[in-house]
Length: 163
Image 1 (cartoon, one colour):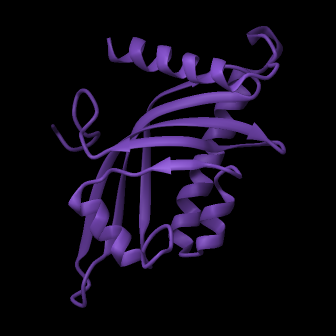
Image 2 (image 1 turned 90 degrees about the horizontal axis):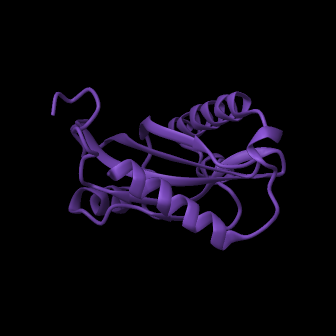
């Protein structure tokens, strides 16, 4: 049920975006999935670098990202002081479903955990989210174009959390 809803939502969103795209037979899905894996790893590395410019370069121009509105996420935003992530942050992204829709559009449903140092004692705080990302290929790169995230766990619980 959830998978059908996600696919229908992505298709509706893409049809509203317009533009000509190649039929499925004219693009290499495996190559695109590999490129998305590379971009995801690059985003994780950009966050770990602590360089806000590297993080911003990893998303598409004009991207719109909606983070969870939970207290934990607001605390992280405050710790970041206006940057995308606080100093010392790391992110681990776990895709659950990735679908290539065309040679320009793909979507991914999954979860992530952001870990960052909180407070003077050096303790780390970890916060999770469930996300739906719409990727757009522009200038030869697949980058996040739209994202909506929730603090609720995905169906089946958090990966590697035994929930």
